[in-house]
Length: 239
Image (tube, rainbow, N blue to C red; front, side):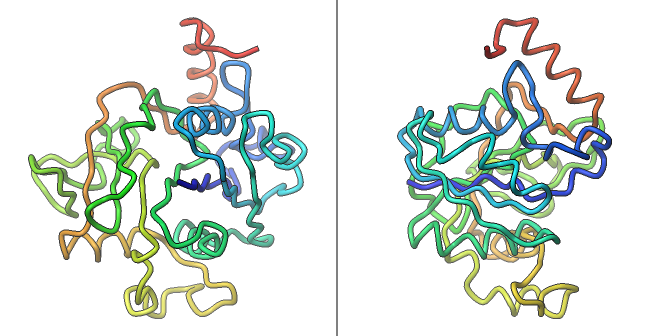
């Protein structure tokens, strides 16, 4: 199984820290955020990882190399100076990911979620990991029913953790779903993933699970500092 780490964001809310370092390469617990994901992916037998890049793209090969230190092979999917958004970035990376289901994880989140729980072959087009909604996203994103089906609306909305498994079929007919949204007609196209997920949810083609453990969206310097302190204080930090 291959994996994609989404690392092309501009990190604007993290400045000045991201003036010289892409957000996924900022250190927590003694190592880059992205390295935590690489370790977890390698631990479950993933060998091929694609990292999509844009802002400060040259920093990633310098920090991660070809992935050999984790027993991985890393390919880089450069999106140009303007990121292609989650959907466009994933669509461009499909040529490196192949035809089978793949794991995708946001490079700017941290979780104690066990990647071994992820299904190698989701029953629909996507399988999402959801968490309790944090203060900065109290309204949540999606609802999860007792049977494990994810929908756009529901009484209890959870937050998407930025961890999931996707089939390339999620992108079948993507232009019909995205329509004439800004960037969709560019080459390469730039568009968000959420409309595709919601369209698949409308067909009951998205499953999910509720992770009740630790999770952080590292979206501000304060959250980064808090996570770093937590990891060092609990002995999870790296060398």
